Amino acid sequence: MVAKFYDPLYHDCDDGNRFRAAGYDYSHECASYKRLSELQGSVLPRFFGSYTFKTKIDGHPRQICLILIERVNGLPMSRLEPKIFSKEERQDIMRQIIDGESALYAKDIRHEDLCPRNILIERSRNPSNSAEESQWFPGVPISPLLRWNIYYGYPNSFEDWIDWPWQRWLEVQYKETESTITSEQRQRWPVYDWMLEITSFS
Image 1: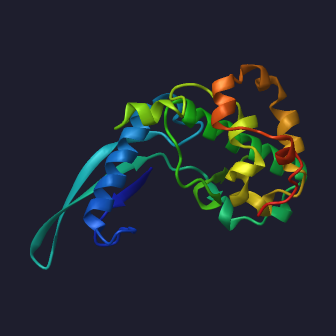
Image 2: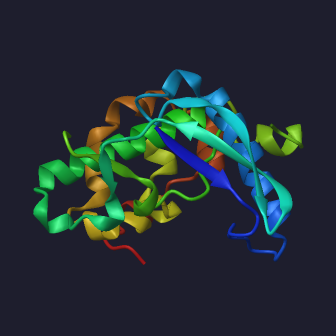
């Protein structure tokens, strides 16, 4: 089991307000784990609840929020050397990442920090604007042929792991999902012929 603390004194933030950032991340992560309960233990670790840790620093009482999650027996992709994996193994890893991210998206959760340091490789192997939300098709599985097209950037974070023609591979792996794509989805994530010819990340 792993305890993840949201301590404002050590919390990273972009706007300079560590307390607001810690509270935001804590509340959103708790809500996400609860919404994704069906995916716990497969796509993401099991969630064991949220708690408050009470302590004192220099005689002053402090309360720090934390969550308890399953300890995954693995390493972040960022600490692994891609070249020690065969192309087939790396393709399998990328397919699992795509499937996992797509499963989150189908539950109305968009991962805003999808990158190798947040992907664990096992050693053994609240909408505020409904109109804005609706244009992204909440609750609807979206074919990876659209959202994982090389043009839209998701694969870029994993370029060290990918040494094969990404777009061609994606088209083969997820060809069976093409029939599920609606005209509205194609308008949101248009795919043009010139996109299919992109062969490198930039």
